[in-house]
Image (cartoon, rainbow, N blue to C red; front, side, top):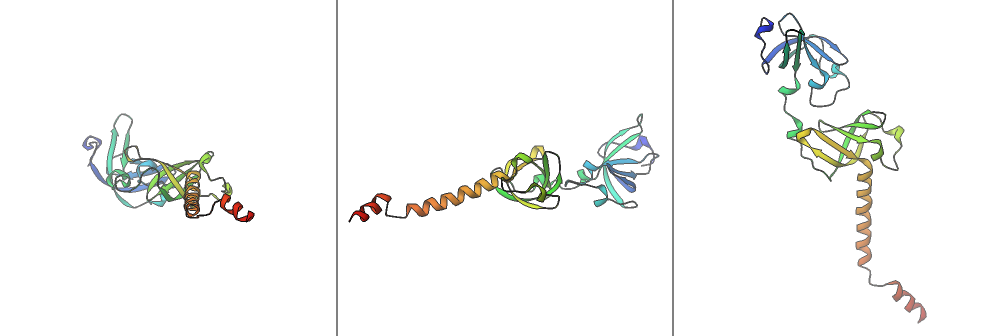
Length: 193
């Protein structure tokens, strides 16, 4: 590739990272203008900082998403050249899994499950949890409420996971009670004798 005219959407390009900033990285692909790999197009996993995946001087292969000569804009993606974890991770609504909190927001948490980005509302936090202990990097047990790989959507609930465990414990207790042969009436009758 020697000029803007040589660029075709979906082509794979080799380049060198020239600068890494908060919202992505600029890559020299051999034309007059550098291409931008937005932070959302660097990896399939959630990134807080592009420097966790890319560094200045690093050689990369990227897919061309957009080339707009009038705006002098080149948009690239390294993510689209990697395997999509949404297609390979086994998960379904209703199961209990462990996730890692990746970001604490005002009203929610971003979570990671085997490379998948997920969401948990603060309303879905366990009644017994201390919000101050729920920080980035903390692993928590949650129940999957929504798993939609076609929309890259994972919604989880800590509260639902806790209620499921409580329900399982109650059911075990109830089963053990069914095995008892004496009732309260039997006990009272034995007291009269």
